[in-house]
Image 1: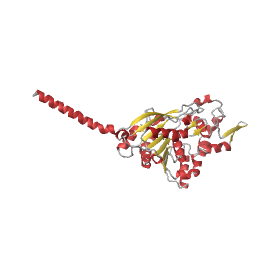
Image 2 (image 1 turned 60 degrees about the horizontal axis):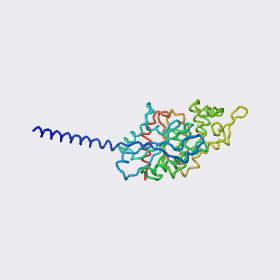
Image 3 (image 1 turned 90 degrees about the vertical axis):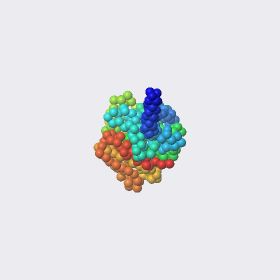
Length: 356
């Protein structure tokens, strides 16, 4: 009798274990994973700042990547802002405003609000705290890094859908600038874009108005050793200048400012400014109208963000050109609703825009 009871108890325990294991399988199957990757970039080799050509990359793989081995996936490339790194989107280094993209994407996929997709988050940092994702004779060819080296690596390493209609770019602040400009220039590589509080969309408003005082501060600097002690806004000018108007023969920071000193006074340099405008998204809009017509475009800005006027002007210019796009102003500043916007706006918009 005791033997029968023991056997029955063993059977019950075994069944319970099996039931609990079965119950846990869906949860496990619905969790994606992060991969710590790195890309060795020929485009960034021998840059004059001495930054490494091998760049860290965090890659989010959706749950279906492991559960459906033959399947291939669209890809979102996500660019961080000035002073950030690839971990900006996934780590708990920002306890006050954590983003936790992995949990966010898992949740949206589980609920059926976005399709399963791969999300690639490269490190765009450099010695000046920001690459601006532009090709530069000083900082390296960051545009080529993103559009060529990184895309090539991702397509050869992961099960992607290797075509422009299945690739998107998005980014915040400096990353929003890079995402919009690179997508405008490269519809053969990306067909959808979302800018979160994008920076520097209208150079005249941004550099000759909003940050003119910082430009004039940088004009007076004499040594690269002064960089660490500068305000972050002064540092932005240096990072942007080295990306936009590089000049290897112009110490201390190796770029040309659109001002020069004459008799101790700053004088606007129109010739140098023309060089700056080649990387100005607003000025490039009429020149890239055919490219823009191929894209699905969205961007947003908080009403308490200092860059609201130029972002609004950028949208107005797109309207005048007849370019469809989504533009939204919301109650917030440059950072405080970033995670929410990524969750409720960016990922759903780009998921809908991406297709084989």
